[in-house]
Image (cartoon, rainbow, N blue to C red; front, side, top):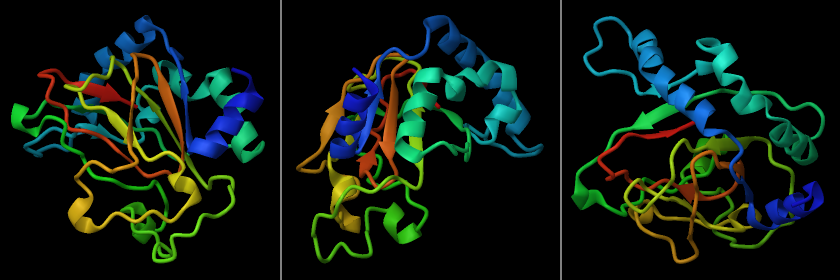
Length: 214
């Protein structure tokens, strides 16, 4: 896929998938480093370990820099946002498995917007439900997955085109499937690159293994 084709799909859908962007050896190195970073980021005296690791690039810069410095990723980011691309944050987490009765449950619909009312799928103009022209994102989320994503590990759900409308999801329905959702098929090493206005949600991990992503 050319950059122009990828950009056209991104403008239409609000996301694009880079297939097999990272090697198995690199992904294994990231997973191997995770417990050590958890130990260093968990405050002394805190009973439960800190699993959602923030500012992680500063802890392992040489190991983790390839996750954000891949030339294919940077070339596309510049096409989407212009030449002044800036890293806002770098986070890595390992989601533990949950009981089997939570299989296929939606983790909660949201947008990655800066305005809190936008974030929880409650766009301030949602009452109008009028499509609007594509605008470049104010932020993008880049999600590399470090294992094949299955129904048991919890699929990524997106509402294609929701960055172009004011789709609203009531509070009571934020943990339910959406009629326009699709579940993205992802393999280990794939990266999803989203528009900050795209409605998306994770699914609960019931695979009996830790689910890692950056």
